[in-house]
Each structure stands twice: as C-alpha cells, then as structure tokens.
Length: 79
Image (tube, rainbow, N blue to C red):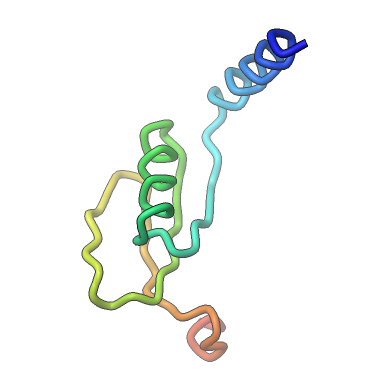
C-alpha cells in the first residue's frame, strides 16, 4: 500500500513539474518560508514573497518579487 501511494505521489509530482505555477509565500524571508521559496525557484516557479520584516536581507532570484508589507496594514495592501 505504501509503495502504491509513493508511485501515485511521484506521478503527480512529475505532472505538475511540467507546469510553471505562481505562488504567494507569506513570511518568505523567515527560516521556513525562505526554504520554500528556494525550492519553488529551483523548480522554475514564479514566487511573490510578502514579509513585514525591514531588517532581513533579500537576495533577488529569477522569477521572484518581494513586497515588504504587513498583512494587517490594509492601506498598503490596497495598493
């Protein structure tokens, strides 16, 4: 049963790997978010990162955009 599930997951991963997707990652400059962004960029996906931190450094990758916005600040989100 486990082998069958792994084969199904592998087939689904291969199917979606062919398509370039767009992702929104909140907290993309943090530890977990940055690893997620790196994985998505390595698979040639487009990534928009939202993070409220002004102190964290951002290394621009291909197909990435960064918005330094606090999700609770409705005025900035409206832009």
